[in-house]
Length: 537
Image (tube, rainbow, N blue to C red; front, side):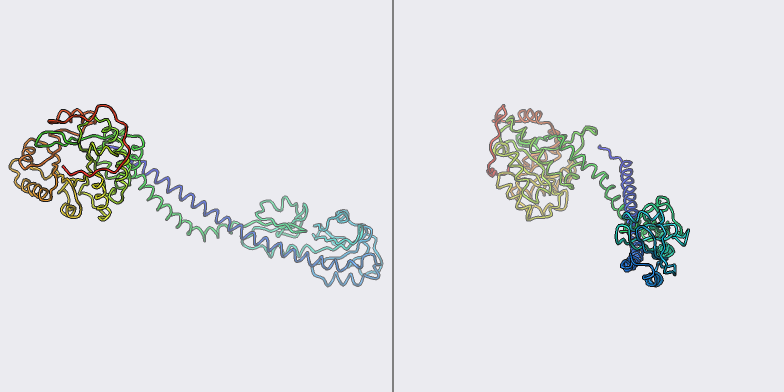
């Protein structure tokens, strides 16, 4: 018997469940991560927009002051002071001429200044428009954002946005979802944690989102509470989903590696590796002792389990659709055997067909393809067991009628073993009726079984069907059948299933009068043609 490992089944199932849960949880983590990134992206955009509004307002004010550049401070001082006072965000506004600060909004004097541009602001004369500075000319150690609008190579308007506005803006954007926010210009950063400048590399270390604007870059990092809150809200969903998926995949895996599916795969591999071999059980003509035919039976030579009996694999092959390929393998081997021409002419070959074969005409085409005109010399009998419940009776009648039209005789096998016997005789036309061995009398005194068997024989005679008795094991049963003119019998009394070479010897030894082999050499296979109908018997 082919052994199936329950340990492997459970281990693989457990592995599939564990991997499924791990994958679902990983996908859940990715989902939470992307949700957090989306939230941070929105917060970063909000932060950038808030600072951009401050910068845009300040730039607009500075552009409004550009017509005053080059004019004397006494002429524009009042206007400059008004602009610095009434415009939001500014700490001071300066006019620059030839690289010198010459007029300020914070000094109430008409006299011009000649203050050199601070060294840290010199880059503004060469193209830099925005700088974060640690202080302004009159307010030291208090950060500010310097903005410059040039009017010529050496002239322009310089404004300082008070860093307190920027810090408060950064701090207002910060929420429970954010650990910190920062604004970076060049290599210097201002953060939500306080009004002081820091190195950009230090201040923005660990930033998760950074957005670049024309004048600055905003950065932020999420707080641990953000991931915790998202995990708390999403975990039940993913755990439930993962549990359901893992459970379903576990069931599928457990079934896939179950005994039936294990056998299905073994059968499929066995067909590919030609492990299934045909054996023939002789069918004897009781009146003459002639071997009139044989029933072709499959035996599985498994490389590990050895010889596997049919009842261990035929039902599984039928349930999984493998019976079609198994029957094709049977037909190919029968063709290769009988095409040798060593059997007596007229020797019948019986094959078993399953309920699946009766749903369409595949079996008809397969017999014609693999057996062809050999049926004219060695008539084939298609045996249908009454143990099957035929689902589509119309299709089955069509298949059986087509088989007989092409010269393939049909037999009702295992008659009396189930409750379908009389119904099958009513619905379908059979050439042979095979009596199940359970209805053969075991002893001379087995009156009940004799009466049942007598009734079956009488019924078959009334229906003009040829009778074959199965499972004949002793001479008493053979004599009983002869006495009732039963035509054929098979069973261990005559021979067990044997290989083809043994069948040839057996058939010749029990050939009777006037029977000779067709030929001794292997013929060339004839082309496929429609088969001529043949009367049963």
